[in-house]
Length: 466
Image (cartoon, rainbow, N blue to C red; front, side, top):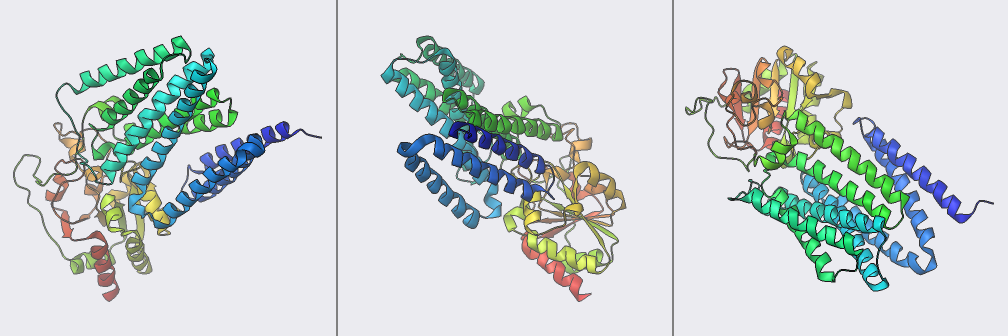
């Protein structure tokens, strides 16, 4: 007979395997849903093992926590709009970091009452508390920025890096004190360390603008994973160690990949204070007032209906207007007329990694039509129309040819190389990075102003009428 502990260990191995396979399946939009299902199955197995391990005395509390979390998750899945996914991801990520910090706090209080910690647990406790608190506080600030409950612009002040350095030094000194005393220091010392870590999380995200928020979210996600993995050493949980390591590693890889996609070092993203909530003036690269050409839905409808290839370029404007289903309806009408339709996806379009992929998948856009930047750019020179729907900074040709631009050197979607470019925007406000876009003054570019969903619906009606 296999003992209960051995059976639980085997179940944990199955859960690990399902997590890893599920993560692998997320590499492609075509298999992402299946990957989520495998990961869900792994989590169910892991939770069942935890319930058995806690025994009769502890399982009601665990079951209550699982039930409460499930209710919150179901409510969020049903009620939260797709446009709010970035801030929900930030909030959930913060919850993971906060949970790690809370576990460390409980372990410290237990040690203070029972007489100390061993070296491994003391070091783990300090690291988990600090990293978890930074992730929690930083994620909350990211949520507030994305939810527009506070400004999305970089919040900077004189001596900011000095203040951050002092706070970090205080955290390190207090953490060293906890380790040196093996948990026997006064409670206020630990709480001061935790408070400084929370403050650092706030100060860490405040100077980061909305344009860099996808990178920040993935970085905070990796922080949470690391904190959770370290927490596993505190409570002797292999499950937490492996799960946290998976999240930490994947978040780190994604952060580096997105920084490379922006052609900016991670240090520049974190300390460069780049990206605002969007300015009001748009000018040419030379600083002169921009000459733009406005168009109508009927004119664009004719252009689209008689095109051979049309490339949709979605951005945050599509997300705000919830226009993804309208975009799919327009694409269906074009395909009925024999037009080849593709979608060009920039790695940092939107407000979280994969934002555009999620929205288009919700609208049942075929996965083989979704092109990454490297695959999409060779298609633009042969496209009759590039239809840009609320994407600004990722289509800005200043990244290629204006050395003074903050985004100079960042890889962009080469929409300006298409035969015609039509940009759907509400107004001439600049994008989230707050910089001008010379694309709008190019001779092959015209602007269709209005709400993205209403504009796309008007285009669909115009194409149908032909």
